Amino acid sequence: MKISIDRLQAVARQAILNQGHSQNDADIILKIIMYAQLRGNNQNVIKLVGAGLPANPNAGEIKVIKDTKLSALLDGAWNQGMVVVTEATRIAIEKAKEHGFGIVGTRQSNSATGAIGYYARWIADEGLIGFVFSGSSEFMAMYGSYEAFFGTNPLAIGIPTSDNPIVFDMATAAIAYYGIVSAKTAGEPIPDGVAYDSDGNITTDPAQALAGAIKTFGGYKGAALALIVELLTRPLVGASRNEDGTKADWGNLVFAVDPELLADDLESFKKGATDLIERVKQRKKLPNVDEILVPGERGDKFYEGVMATGEIEIDDNLWHELQAIAKS
Image 1 (spheres, rainbow, N blue to C red):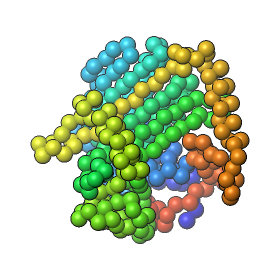
Image 2: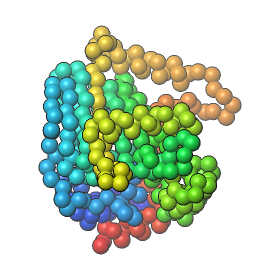
Image 3: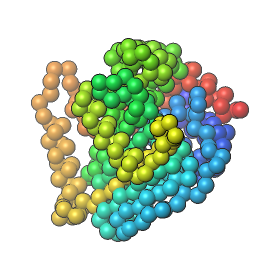
Image 4: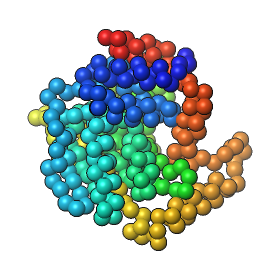
């Protein structure tokens, strides 16, 4: 069904508040979830249903536990992941603007960080080049295995241009975890060949996939990239494990780079980036290709379309569940 964006935002905000978050944290979470929703990204309001994003009642104050002029390590104190990575991004931008480079790691955050393209775009909008890596619970198998071990291990890169920034945001999984959750909520199958059941058989049943493991994209190459993200978001930032070896928290890494460390100046870099993008888009097209798209462009077009109408399509089951949470 189609509903107004304003109505969706109001219901989603109340659903977040009903899961125990403060007004300030709810504003942050809502902004990032709606960023995804309005760009056709599955890291959207689906996150609020099912297990949801309940606030940790033992959450404390986010603290910098290691600090240099170029780096910081944050103890998330079990705050929601989007709140923790928002603070990490703010600090990375601040350090990069002052010293040319800023790298910030986080540990001990509570649950998902949302669409990490949001943070990469924020960095790019500040005239910096941004890199974001996020770890999570065990959802995905290593190449050659069917046992969940990695998170879906997304990475995002934001690059400023004279127009909209280039925003590359991808999970290293063959399908995003919330893509499976969305399919389960809608009562639909997932694509063939992207997930295993608990016995190692390929399945299109989202419930069986959630009990099994997601495959990495691109075979061993995707698995290698997933391993790199795992290394950057766990041992590097000191993420912790339970006694049985399973993950106890989420680890994340953000860094921002001033293009002027290498480029003559920011504007010449933006101009060069824009020129390169325009040349890419002008290449000869294959049959049935109307336009060559660059990273972030599909989401920008989706955003422009829904904002022009003020309405957005949402699955009926998802909308009913979201309303129920908002009223609980």
